[in-house]
Image (cartoon, rainbow, N blue to C red; front, side, top):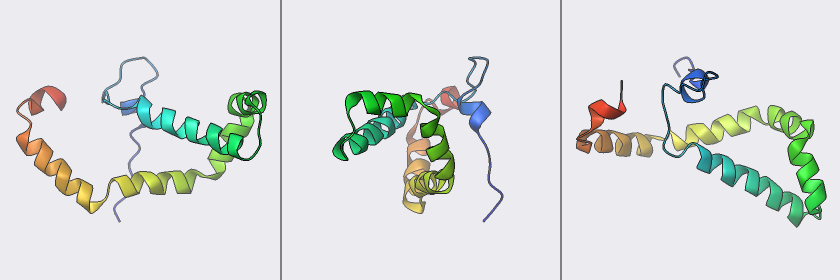
Length: 101
């Protein structure tokens, strides 16, 4: 496998100028955080406990410990099948020069 890339600054620039604006950047985050909240609720946490956990450093510490699993999920999305679909979509995009710099 080639060296990994880090696109953090391109998709979430600190200055507010995002080089690669993403059309669905927020949706995966909402699904993820709702999934955590529902998992906590399913296992008996109250709304107050869920709020506390999400706003505490516990969320950061837990997710830091799951970095490999989260990255593997992202790599699964970048599967060979999705590459084929991506290339097909790019070929059919008449506005490609507008979207990509």
